[in-house]
View 1: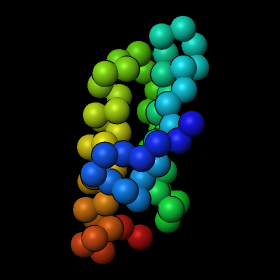
View 2 (view 1 turned 180 degrees about the vertical axis):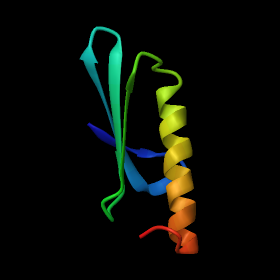
View 3 (view 1 turned 45 degrees about the vertical axis):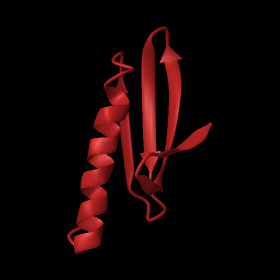
View 4 (view 1 turned 30 degrees about the vertical axis):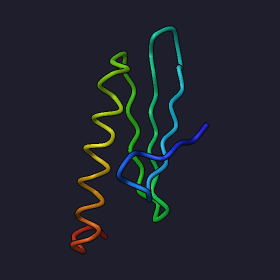
Length: 66
């Protein structure tokens, strides 16, 4: 199930447990940008994803991303 990332309404997030205790997080932007992280740190992965998405969003607003 896809959800929104708090504070980043253009981004959707999907979390899947791909193996026992191993999670895959995929964040997507409507313009095609994608962040894909896999790991065991279920508390840290969403934070890393949000940080990366916020950086891309900032670059988009400044026109630094093509």
